[in-house]
Image (cartoon, rainbow, N blue to C red):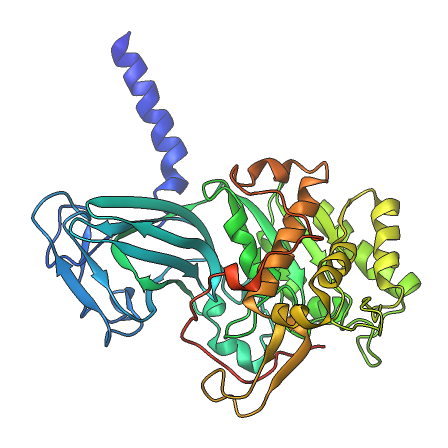
Length: 443
């Protein structure tokens, strides 16, 4: 009986494991000259190499520290006083990433961002003899669209973005990050939340620009949910569809995945992408909803946030016309969930006030950043602080829906009240290395 049972189990595992065997898996032991079986030793000289398929993007500031012989990934680490980047060439998909931090003889401070500055781990401190591991889920995508001979029509600036470069890239930041190990395992059963939108949603590649979509991964269970942010600056509903971005999402979507849809800022502008709010705009939203449902996906509408435009009484002025109301109508007509970011952003910005709200947007005097020769005074695009606050608004809006996705939020996320915004001074964001004075497309 035991023999037959063993044979049955082995056969079942072999059958079920056909696809599993194809899933990518790596174990990297940082700071080691050699490592235990099954681990790849990584030193401070391991520059990324296409043939190996892994390594650091730069090695000038890195230092390998060896502590003692022993268990793999606890016997040393790599540190730097500057942000550093580790990349692995991987197929398209979702990846469970486990990063181990710490130092047997000292403390460390660690922040992890993935791809183009997606927030994964925020200010993790370890103390002497403390070794801590944290999980995260990273989505990797390629421009090719599966099943058809077509690619996403990337804009020129996107060619250099980390979220289209066929690698999984981790940014290690903080006052003194100490990275002991990185384990990467491809998964095929994560709930994927696809984001479709413009510059207010996109993973902004360069400081000081940011958007709520790149803060969104931080709020979810890192073992269950992957955020796939397909938003891009300057996009409208029509352009997003024309460039193959919606097709790309649909080619990857499986039943039970989500599609968050936030467009308005560029749809209201005259020209080829213009949509009239109560006719063509609503029709296009319904097309996105229909396409997502056809794949077994769950569409979610997100009304666009206000621009920073105050009247003399300190009240936000509506520059988005009837578009938010048109989206609210579609949500009712199509019986889909709505996150009213538009309404929450009004409360948030008015609570901040005309002067303090500048801190939520890209308002910085000339010389604040390298290569910045003029003042930044952008009332549409967000600072990292503003993007984080807006992500909190979206999360709070999600909590107030009936979507099952809300049960996959981290348990320790505090309730957010947009009428009581946090202080800018309390927000911690060490700069990533890539800085640009070029304003993102869209307004």
